[in-house]
Image 1 (tube, rainbow, N blue to C red):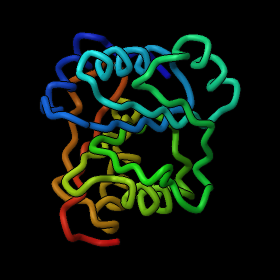
Image 2 (cartoon, one colour):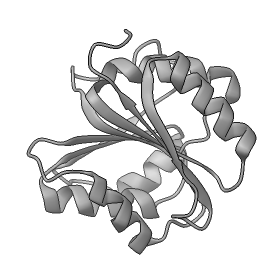
Image 3 (spheres, one colour):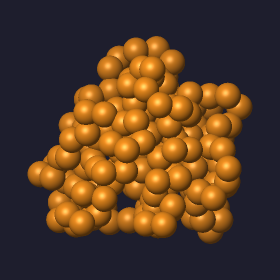
Image 4 (cartoon, rainbow, N blue to C red):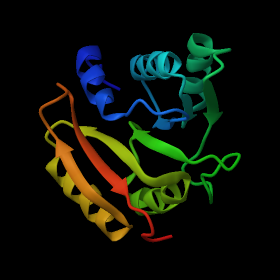
Length: 172
């Protein structure tokens, strides 16, 4: 994962309201900077943060950096598992920095939907300027009961950001 600018991430995190018991899950396959920044943010706010690491070597690197933090749970994860629910927890925010293969994107969105709270947001980091991938994700989000989808293409140097919402009473 290319670097994320800390000041820009700080601006993005302002969308998360100061409410108790906020839960964030992060699907990631590389990069230690963003997980560290999100971990610091969630620790300061008293939120829960789970990182679903999609690579064993990556998980081991994260464990060395972020072990024994009470607000953080590291999970060895695979996107092909039939359900993404772990311990019945629902998440307010889903960060996706992993490169989700085109062939499983729709299944990914279908499996993420049940673990999101109503009104929860999914934030998908896309390579800067990759409009083909952006339109594919937007189409899949719309077809799989996500609404109010927007892109932010001027916040990060290396990424465009796609944000969409799970609406109450929509879909599965």
